[in-house]
Length: 553
Image 1 (cartoon, rainbow, N blue to C red):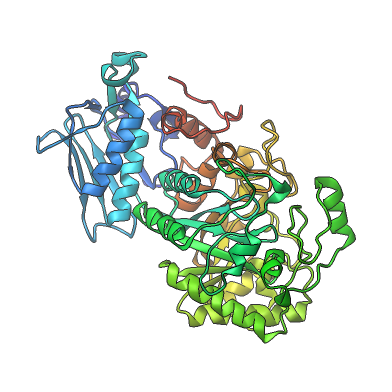
Image 2: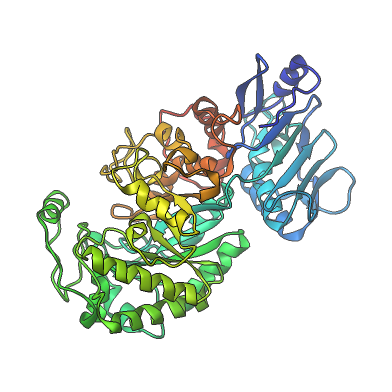
């Protein structure tokens, strides 16, 4: 990370004493406090002057969408909306094409003005998110006053920032428990505030099919009405549910307004019991192993039966008929319609935990399904198991969900995607699976991925160290999945995702571990703790873990 000392360490410390919510870092042997920004920026310099005072009379000029985004943050954080106008002293939000890498931004703050520039609209949006994190109540002037009576400031600082990885994702499983439009939109807002730019929707699984398709209407008519445990989701009187085509379009458009793409996943050939409810001719008989009986014993539920909705947690018992041509007609119909509904470049076809499909049949299916998606002009994405199959479509993206220390054979399967011209999305389960239990937290979540998972473990890993032989050039990005076997409400999502989603976001956006003074656990825990008041004002019900020194106001 490039970091300048400013005029003197003493001057920097003097400036820092004016700031609230700052994190101490070592700088050339001196301890200097800098504003708390998450994810850590590429370059940050504390100025020596007074902070910028933010009041209801502060004017915001420049790009309209960015101004509206900033106004919403200020309203939530400070209780007022900045003015519009052309006064010289104020906040200026600009897009300057060619000023940096895609999604990059620069913030320059002094006592008289705040200038945020983005190389593109996304960069400006991310600059505004960082500016929102910089807003602090000035304890010297405002004490505990609220709203327009409080004194709010932005510290004198210069930030230059750009993402490390192009793909920065959050996955939400709406199959195990369905989550309605407003919950998904809320999660988009939260993910975008951390500079994540992809929403991966796990739309289908053994427990339910959650997307309406004109070509296959029986899927939602017959296979969308159940969930794990038969539980209803918040706001619904009955279990299950699905997104209409109009609802899915609304999600896609809402995500785009926050500079996020949607990556829809239709999991196959396993995780397909729900398909068999609608099209029994396409599904194999469930295969029940002793391991699955252990899961049923531990977590409850009944053994899966053909034609009967499944409400348990066991996995690996279902499979499509991979040698039947009707199956590939189904795959073509589903992904053809989904491709037309999805402007983003990726379609995810799952490919994980196909324990009831022979290796030979799995390879046949993966090759054909990936080619069907590629022929649609989309880039196929699959979980890392698919890397074992010959015939995978060129440039298919692999998603690694193994552990921080890869189990035998897993690295080879993951490397196969890169050898085939693709890249990897890293989702190490024992670090950033957000549904794993906290060490000292609520009863929500599971523990199978070496859990419980602390915030420290979620943070202290380096993407380039996960898969042997793969460096940044082979990594498309990082994604934090949130599976919903135990997650029923928007409040549950907040609790399990925050603050660990911020750790994943820093792995995706910020400089590599060791390349920045800020990329340490000690720094992160201070910086994320300083975001407590902002998250509270934004309505994010984060888990107040005792691993973090939370700032309160």
